[in-house]
Length: 245
Image 1 (tube, rainbow, N blue to C red):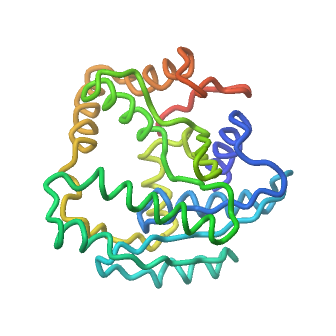
Image 2: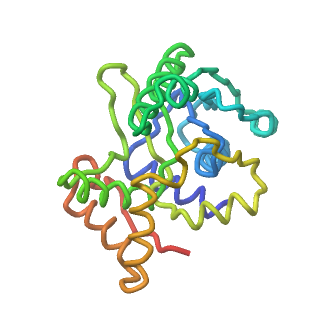
Image 3: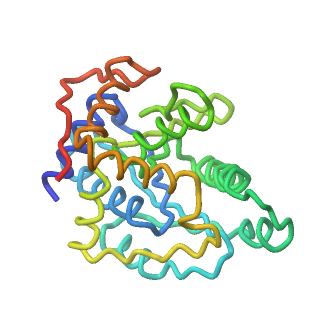
């Protein structure tokens, strides 16, 4: 717990993600990434030198998922929890019968989440993207779009005024998995009909296979993103490349 909070603290400091008085919402899907992020930010809140408010928000896709376990944990961590009920799942899969649903689903979820944040008076959104997500997104942009690109550690959404932050960029997915299992977090199985069949999953497997021959592949890609640097990726603090454990 202390080690991972230290990595989050370093990432927050390197990219100036949190300022005193911030009202931060955590987008909680029920998966391991968002739950680990919520737990680490709740822990960081207790000793961080810049006081901030924290709240968890879930966009219920209308796929029959039970969030009661998350509600209990939020109560235990003293984090307010808000669920926004939608029919995004039925609209995409039953009504529209989208053949390529991921893009539309992401836009609808993002819109619902941003509106919920604004309605509740929050201005920052913490997302559970980790180290491996960044590497995969970079490779996906290169392979499928012909661009050298990735999401930013801190993203200013000009149209809404919301600032997105990604405090877990220094933590590997394997570490997130182990921590979630160790803590017994109430992870909710993803009921999305196309889960594990996306382009991201293809790239994840490709990177895994290449890493068998080139063990430092992910570290080299991540380091290149910061040294290039991609827009807003150059760390402002003293960055030390995290090793996978």
